[in-house]
Length: 108
Image 1 (cartoon, rainbow, N blue to C red):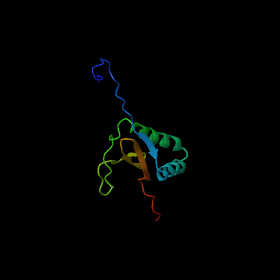
Image 2: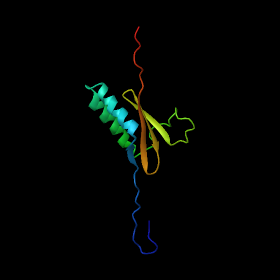
Image 3: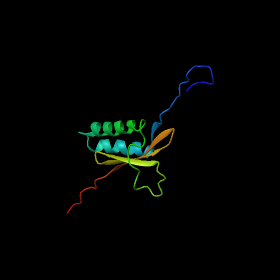
Image 4: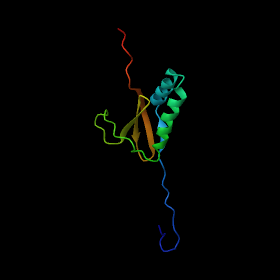
């Protein structure tokens, strides 16, 4: 962009949103990684790695289909049988929940 006739180019600064983990989501992720110690680090790191990618492209995952009256900024992704829900804004991506998708087996 040219700055009003001075002939110099101005740099346009674009800031990326930051990732903020809610207490509930952070606690659920810690609990999830403790349930299966042999795979805990792998599962946790892959979920965190996917969440970090959201800074570059927050809308890379579909709109959260379980959110009632979703205005379009609530989204979710699934990784290793966990569903991670998050809310997008220009300044931050707030991770709201981490839920295990597979129910416990029933005894018979």
